[in-house]
Length: 216
Image 1 (spheres, rainbow, N blue to C red):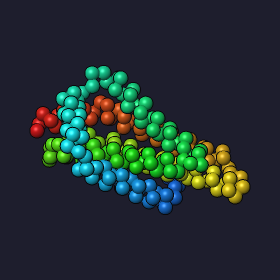
Image 2 (image 1 turned 90 degrees about the vertical axis):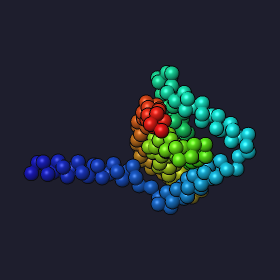
Image 3 (image 1 turned 60 degrees about the vertical axis):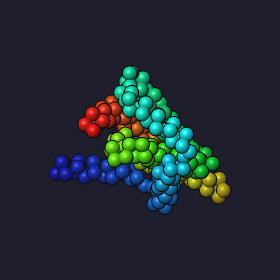
């Protein structure tokens, strides 16, 4: 009887942990998903709105990137990517403690969705069918997963920001310790995923892109 009890206890703890990690307002999730979708559509359309000189600049940038696809110093590239991604995560997380955090989080999510979509559309516009494959490999899975993490963290940041605002307006006390424990757990999970995706981006993505280019 010991093992079933232990499994039951473990299952309860796992369920509580999952509840802490994924108990977000569905309306907030839907709202941020719509913002991300708008960013994706805008990024896809933005390429067509560029002037000929800007399109040439984008084309030259992509060409230079593909010619020097593997970094000279992987450690330096990894460090830079980690710093950029971690700063983005920490900024979103800190905005949860700000009353004005909501609109800034929305803008950051829009920007990230826009940039992913614009990069993909740039590959397609310059390299056609080959570009769609290269653009997909350049973004998948790390950029898509990072976008999901930003969306996930953004939901909690808005949740905390709204809770603080309601507490101030209605002069209600908050269980700040409980909120902080959950919010810290969300930050840790987000950073762990970001580290894994950054490792993939730094070490595997260049190799995959180079292999596909050689095949095509």
